[in-house]
Image 1 (spheres, rainbow, N blue to C red):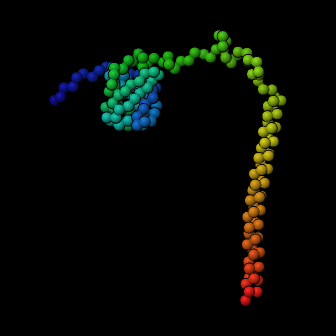
Image 2 (tube, rainbow, N blue to C red):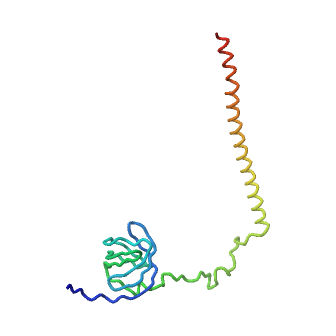
Amino acid sequence: MAHYPPREARKPVRLAARLNHDGAWSDVMILNVSRKGLMAQGRRPPRRGEFIEIRRGSNVIVAQVRWASCDRFGVLAQDAIDLAALADDSHRRRPPCTVNRIERRTAPRPPGKSLPTAQDIADRAAASARWGRMFEFACVAMALALLGAVLAEGAGELLSAPAQRARLAMAH
């Protein structure tokens, strides 16, 4: 019976990450991590033996897939995995948008950047309606011109047939 070295301790986690394999990116959930590997879950798991890249924030893990089944897979990392850095969510937190310590949405507007008035909105709506009517008129005019050309062509063919028969009869 073969004796395998004891397995490294796994730390259960739930960390959202991005997976690059076959040149395409997809979302995965890292389910557990050890110093040299991890298990993840995703919609399209990579195949066994494939080399992949997993990114979470500024952390990049290059690894080889050791096993895959259904929607989960396990990898052996090229380098040691720093769990503390991987679990750090500071890359997701953004400082609040402030202007001189005033929340952006409550800060006064700069000159020339006032909110549109009801009259401005009504004027824009009227201008938009005028453009819409002009566009509609142009489309109907083009359709009528096309229909007129088709009818003229048909009438020309219809009237030319008797004239052609008369010419043939006179020629004999």
